[in-house]
Image (cartoon, rainbow, N blue to C red):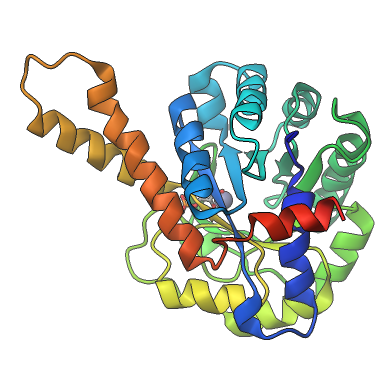
Amino acid sequence: MPLLTMKQIMADSVKLATTDVDPKERYAVGAFNFSTIPEMVGIVEGAREKNAPVILMASLGAIKYIGSLELIAETAKGIAKTYPEVPFCLHLDHATDMEQIKQAVVAGFTNVMIDASKEDFEINIARSKEIADFAHNHSPYGINGCSVEAELGMLAGHEDNIHVEESGKAYTDPSLVKEFVERTGIDALAVAIGTAHGFYKAAPEIKFDLLEEIRKQTDVALVLHGGTGVPEDDFRKCVAMGMSKINVGTGLKKVYTDAVREAIKTLPETEYDPRKIVGPGRKAITAEIASKSDLFNCSGKAPAVLRSIYK
Ligand code: G3H
Ligand code: ZN
């Protein structure tokens, strides 16, 4: 199966989110930040275990560390060949540099996020529209071979090159959502409803009334950023209320690192096989993706995703 776009991956979830179904039927696709190539494989293996769709997210830090957009895009292509049963897409996360985003489209990313959330409304619209027009027309996979996520409102916290103080955060204004989506032509909207990037000092206060209002304004996929540390019941409520993508980054780094630390502690000092040292990190990631797939009600949804694309 070729790499899918994020729009394709989420079409079934969006349909359930925007029609009058039993909220228990709704689900969100898990989106996970990776830092290294083996983690990309670990994430896809977790989705395979649960027969779930999944979204691989490359942060700017990961691109710098791994080496290039092309290396990541080609790896994703290889993974798609190796795991044809897993519907997944490759997403560029929180990008601000217009040229870099276009380069990612051309390299073969199947979703890009333009994050102009710090800019004023008109600039955010102009940049998001420029990327949507470009991505929909310049993917090596053909017209609409790459979809686009943009953000309205601003989350507090730290995410690579983006830092927003608690005092600088801004909830998504529902009265701007319809205009933003229509004028930009984006496929998914990241919303600020009370979550933050990174570890929380106290449990986040999610504004569910805001989510309800936003969901009424548009039919595009809604994206919850800052998934690390969100209480499980809040995730369930967000999913039931129509969230289609949930991003988890920091928590996954911890899962990986804790497992590697534990391996180093337990193995004899004479153990030099890197697979035994970092392998448990990848395994722990696989288990975490499997468990998040259950939590987001996404387990077993791979066939429904494929049906929605190839019907
Ligand atoms: O875009 C990435 C996510 O929003 C990750 O947030 O690191 O708080 O889980 P997190
Ligand atoms: Zn984010």
